[in-house]
Length: 226
Image 1: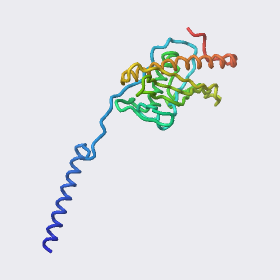
Image 2 (image 1 turned 45 degrees about the vertical axis):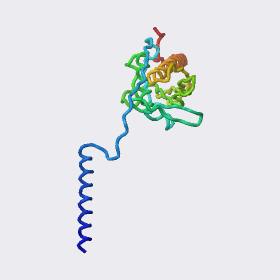
Image 3 (image 1 turned 120 degrees about the vertical axis):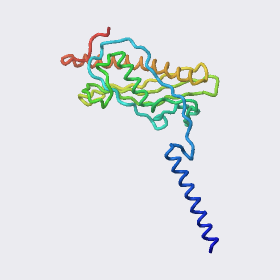
Image 4 (image 1 turned 135 degrees about the vertical axis):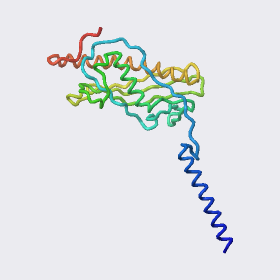
């Protein structure tokens, strides 16, 4: 009986020590399971765009939608048509759709002026809404001799006032990767995105000018570009 009580006492003491260890780790912010090592952050930026006065009505930029494998901060690789993986040596500073929304805001503000460009949900009145869907934004052939990045995005311009779609268009871009390093991979993403945005902006301005001509009696869309 004494041995049983002694064993019970040792068991309780061991439990106390484990509980104290767990409490200490919790208070000190440590983890018994360990933490994942943080990755370097890389970002996407809009390169300089020539200013224009074609758009002179409020335009709101929505957060792009995407499939789950792209709705992440991880930088995607597509090793095969039915496979998606991620780079281990870096990531975006936020989920890719949020990062691209910031790039769109920056690019459109450079082109048309920050007065007329805002994000959806900012609480400001708007006339048009710019929506997008990311179909591809990943690295291809990384372990081969011809690595590249591929971008594929659907852009949609909505007339918010009249609740109708003005136009929709899919844009694709491919940019080669000079060296399989994080710096060069991210540089290729930025190059491809800049080219894609230049085409998309031209398409948007053409769409808005057509809409302006159709509604010349109530025209507040724009003037000739500078």
